[in-house]
Image (cartoon, rainbow, N blue to C red; front, side, top):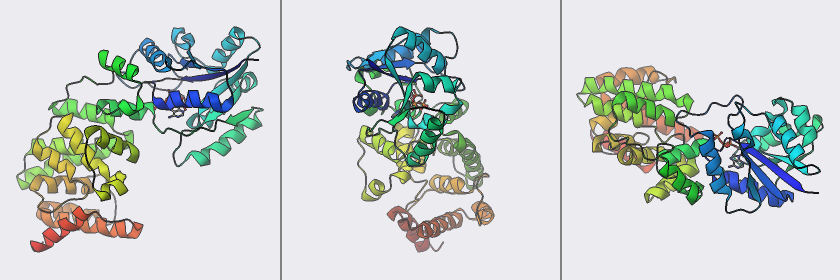
Length: 394
Ligand code: ATP
């Protein structure tokens, strides 16, 4: 009996995580082939603005699958009108491959929601379910309840024992915009993306006007960070007016200071590798602090920002010795913008308008206490910043 894996998704765009999951999953599960089925539209999933057409996504999946004889690509859902439902797709495939044993492959992130999919009872009757690990800290906690819930519905559930590859299309779209996505893309897909100017790969984001910059940056952030970034920009402008700094530079640095923050630690390292940036020991050990460095690289290379803006972004998390006014403004604005709420923030807000360097010192000292309480190391740059301020009698 032929054993066929079904692997659906938006594939916006298809990445090495998808392909590895399908190929290695097929090997681990003993499948004869896996059919990749890009959806025209996934129920309840909003396609981000500027996404390629369904036909373009289909073409990219074909290119990504081409080197692997075990993979087949179906246009079944792309040809359909509107949203496709998995139960319908499985029914059609059951008719197309009579007598075959169907296995629905899903990434671990989809497991918990599967019992709520339309006609879930029919889905688990028609196909076995195979969970493909995606990695991440939360995964272990999700797998067991997800599997239990499906088994209670009568499903046969197996886990494909594969090594997870943690990339997602959402993160990959950011890497594409930052021009450092090659690690996770088939070269033919990457070529297709460039030739068709998809995912902002050929956008000219050099010195964008503020309204457009705001729009572009919001598209690159995690949605829960947007208010903070806008608050930081507005606060930076107020501080620039107070301390005689360039308000345009302050606005641009505030807007861009967290532009790469949505990339997790390993992807921060991906960006540094792609840009040929050498890292110090502290950054290698704590890649989570790297967004200041990667943000400054992106501000310079992708957004064509000037040296003052780039430097303010570069030092906004740790500070450094000899900070100039704009650098101090972005550091302090990041700390005290209106969405921040912690004991001492009001004092910091007042101080920022009466004595900028004292506010900088207070921010650095509060960070040191926080890091100490967490048992984390303090970056050498923060220590040097405090030494420098103390040396000036601040
Ligand atoms: P997005 O970030 O846009 O939500 P995605 O990377 O999760 O996209 P989809 O096309 O929505 O990709 O996912 C299709 C299927 O592939 C889903 O079952 C998903 O869980 C699975 N999948 C996606 N990325 C990986 C990965 N890195 N490893 C294993 N499975 C994955």
